[in-house]
Length: 416
Image 1 (cartoon, rainbow, N blue to C red):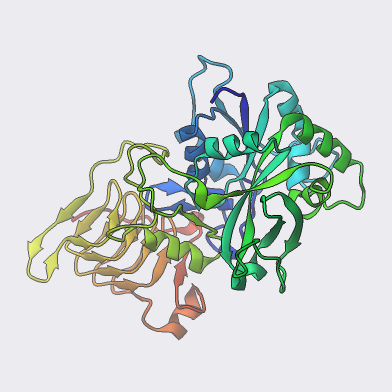
Image 2 (cartoon, rainbow, N blue to C red; image 1 turned 135 degrees about the vertical axis):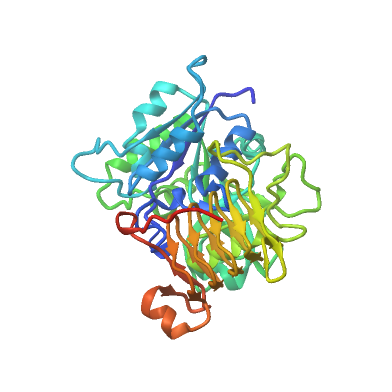
């Protein structure tokens, strides 16, 4: 990429709809796919796109996220323009936290001025998606845009859940609607709307000018989608970029790009379950577009015992490093690192996070088990809705979420 690009990732989301998974961590730090964190997707997209100068803006319960960035996303100090630096909220505008997405960037405007990039890529850190950011920047330059907004075509029926972009026939943005009941559709496609993905490419002078202007307006929400961009598109060329036109190296041309808003328990569960399909919508095994994360010195996964009724096995599942399946059965599930499944236990259709210990003669289905939880022997989870609701969170669709306070978790001895 010949122009100088600065990446700024918004990673301070509270993720209230993902409770209790976000009780002790920010949404971008929530585990995903066995060994990853949600923020790994946007960071990998930027690195794979040739963007190596990245600030990660944190705020809410950021310690888990900071630890992950330290373990998995540190560059050497050989080149000063290659960095991934977490930036805690500095309260540079007084005794206030970030008031909106635009305010978050404004409160760190000195970082942009010091770096002096040609364009700034402002992306969210809480979605699961694959995207070549370089392709979006090329479109931005070709249209001579002041700002380009990544847009996701979707059915009209979904419009009430998203911020909707109104465009003309050239995809220049002429307006925004927030979760409308009667949305503006894509010209020539009356059954589709454009949802904003919350990912932006700004020409740096435009961004700096608009942030300073927005900060002086007491009536502003200080948010890109709600205030700054709706005002700016009336004065400057602001364009929408079709996410489905983006191409990923190593993926079949006919395969649609992947994006999921994993903001609810059910959506998070479904996105994890996508990974274990024979031909997954999200391919983690593309060597030309690797998904990077922290690497740990964990041993290989192990499957123990081969006796009738006591056979360690995993079917249509993802099993991460350090797992021991000791005479138990795992089916249609995603297991994080160092999970121990004891004998005569069955785990089905579930997401099991790191260092979970599941006792003997236990049956689990349709569940999400948070990190470090110990499930006692002879437990049943996912079979009796009333009993599950008395102990755990259960979604309307029947997904059981088991979480534990780290300070009171029982430490189990791992033995076969």
